[in-house]
Image 1: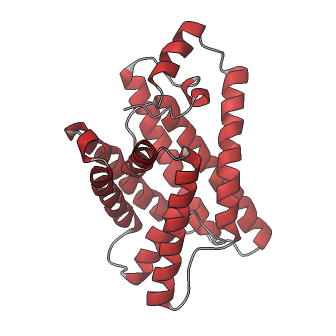
Image 2: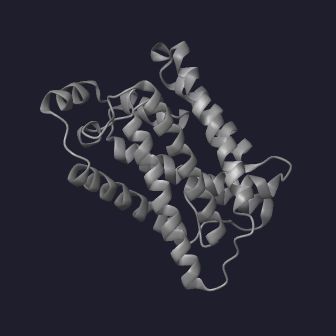
Length: 238
């Protein structure tokens, strides 16, 4: 399953050994979850997906955020089948492996960062900027590894195939849906939305910009691949 959705992503994918790519992929997951954890500790708002799963930990505390995140991935895998059952294959269940690893890494990093408490707003802002940089770098490494899609990304891709709508519009609509769900659950169960603040907007802006920066730096200093390899990667990109 190809993680390179666009031509510019296909240009940076690793076509080397599978072992190296898996190591890169799992390193990316760890760095991503570290970024998510630090964003939570910043306390000025987090991404739509994180705000939903974090809100659920306030509604029912015995389950960890990693557990809720894995449950969300399971739901997305089911919806993927529901949207386009004829294209669903047994190998799609392989996406649950990195989803489980992500859930475990998230809980580990939340425990490791538990003692981080920021008082000054400038410090919170700086921590969130660092968190988004790490989150984006984790995503960059996962794109570079070019391996298995997470169920959430698989669902967005499946909607793209089913509807033909622009991929970016579908992703934006999906994120907004998660945001509305998070706010609705917060209002219904806790009296007000939680974890949706200016940091949520920052996340939406900064992560994309950081990824663009990593693409640029890789192409500038990482060395361009031969045209033949770029052609092979581009032909397999979704």
